[in-house]
Image (cartoon, rainbow, N blue to C red):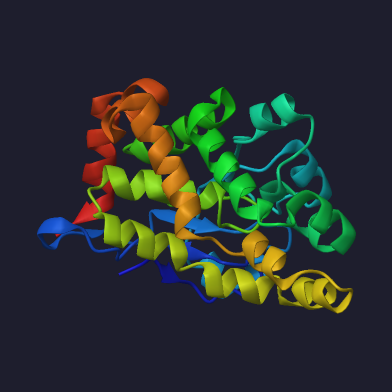
Length: 268
C-alpha cells in the first residue's frame, strides 16, 4: 500500500508515508514523514488539509536556482532546512539536470529534443539518480533528512523538491527501506506519484506537445519509471554492497539514529 495522498489545495503531490505496509503486520506511523512538490503556492490559511498536518520542519532538496525562482512559503514557526541534493552534480556538469529544470525544458521543444531526444531522457535521469547516491551534496541532503527524522522530539516533517518525484522519491525510498519495506512496496510507493505529477504538469505538457514537442520526452520528464529507481539502488549496491552500509558510511547516519527512526515511524 503506497503513501496516502492528501487533498491539499495549495501544495502539489502532497503525501503521507504513513499507512505504508511493512513486514510483520507493521505500518508506517501516520503524520510524521510527509512528501510533496515545491511550496511556492502554500497558503495554510486557505488550505485546511495542510494546516491540519502541523508540519514543524521542511527539508528542501532543490537547487539555488529553483529556490530563487519559486521560493517556499514557509509558515511561521516552521524550521526550513536547505539540503541541495544536486549541487555537486551541477558543479560537475556546469548545468542543472532535467530533474531540476522541468518547466524550462518543457517550455522549449527544440531544447528538449536536443538534450533529451532519441531515448536520451531515460539514460540522463538514470545518471541523475546515481548521483543522488554518489555525490557528496546528495549524501549530505539525505543525511539531513534522516537526522531530523531520528530526533525523538521532532514533530511532523515534510521533505520536497520541485515536482516531488525524483529527489523526493529517492528520499522516500531511503526512509521506507530503513523501515523494512519490501521491494514491491518500495516500487509501488515510488510509482504512485505519477498521476499527481501528470496532473500538476498537464498544462505544460499540452503546450509542449502543441508546439511539436515529442510526447515521449514529456512522459520521461514528468513521470517516474522503475528504471530510474533501479539506477539508484544499483549504485548503492555497487558502491556500498548493501543499504545499511550506504546509510552508515555513505550518509554518515549511525545505527542508533536508524533505530530511533524505526521506533518513531513504525506502528503495529
